[in-house]
Image (cartoon, rainbow, N blue to C red; front, side, top):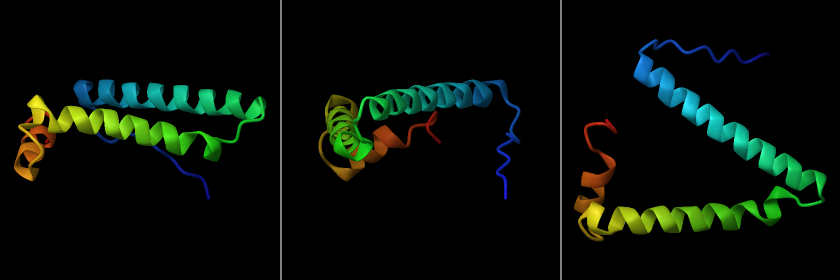
Amino acid sequence: MSIKNEPSIKNPLIAAIREQLEHRALWMYLLCDEARKKGLESQNFAPDAIRRCGLYQGAGLRGKAGGGASLKGLKRTLFTKPAQ
């Protein structure tokens, strides 16, 4: 079975966002591949890096932009019109 990932939405803005995500995924793959070549297994470093990223971004979401630590403040930050 082969996966065919062909975009069905042709909107230029959506296409640009998709390209950005693909570019970030490529960087992540190449970084992990180089680490593996040097003897580092992703399970030894990736969970810590993911946690750090989540804590960093979460602090910003809960901060001034998020209106505090409440779920309502988080909702205002996560579900803006552009995000919808």
